[in-house]
Amino acid sequence: MARLDIANVTKLFGATRAVDDFSITVTDGELVCLLGPSGSGKSTLLRMIGGFEKPTYGSMTIDGEEVIHLPPEKRPTGMVFQSHALWSHMNVFKNIAFGLKLRRLPKAEITQRVEAVLDLVGLKGFGERLTHQLSGGQQQRVALARSLVLEPKILLLDEPFASLDQHLRERLREEVRDIQQRLKITTLFVTHAQDEALSVADRIVVLRDGRTEQIAKPAEVYRTP
Ligand code: ADP
Ligand code: ADP
Image (cartoon, rainbow, N blue to C red; front, side, top):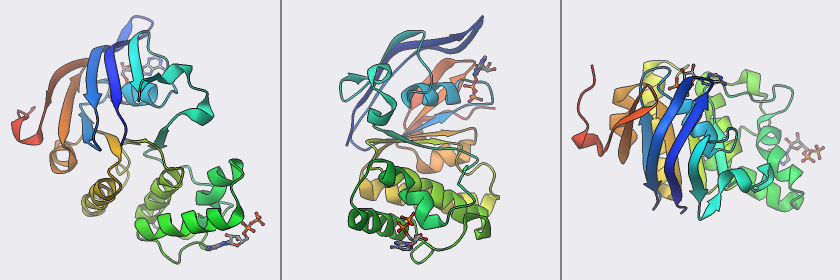
């Protein structure tokens, strides 16, 4: 379990305040949803936590270490995007093993970890499949597995199921919630769908135009129009 501390973070793009004075502490394997309409600053916030964007002002630490001071390979976050960006010329096993190979782990350990994570995401036996042979939901499970196999301290999910149909989205968010609770992994989940946030989150951050409207447990969040 990891601790994320965000203190008074502002991100400016020219005159645009993408994120305006945002603060939160997330810990204890909590799942926090960042909820808001398009342009409210959700992705910018997530990208800063992942170290892909620098805050203009403020501090953002994971277990006490300032994210922007960490070199990319030391960043303790794993990110899953809306479009999975799997390597279509590699099979499922190789897609997931890629990051472990870069870290030069022993082959036996790579195989063991990839198989364990395939099992975790419900894709046992899918190692040899090519990713373009998989359904959209299966592809997102591979993207999740590729992220989890590196054992990140914090999982960052950016609208991971937005391209899937409603029924599949509902199923996958339950699966993610289940996996998240089993691993007790601190998670930030970006969505513009209120029902999604209400059903998976421990706490919800409601954002609008970069500003924090509310941070509350699902039962306490007011209905936004
Ligand atoms: P959301 O994820 O909630 O849709 P974003 O974080 O993508 O919101 O965007 C927040 C605001 O910041 C928007 O006004 C957007 O146009 C602006 N923005 C985001 N990224 C950039 C960028 N790289 N350059 C300029 N403006 C940006
Ligand atoms: P490389 O030739 O790039 O070193 P590997 O030796 O790691 O590749 O793997 C050879 C083939 O065996 C690959 O197609 C890989 O997907 C497959 N493979 C290895 N271990 C497993 C496993 N546990 N489950 C499924 N496929 C595996």
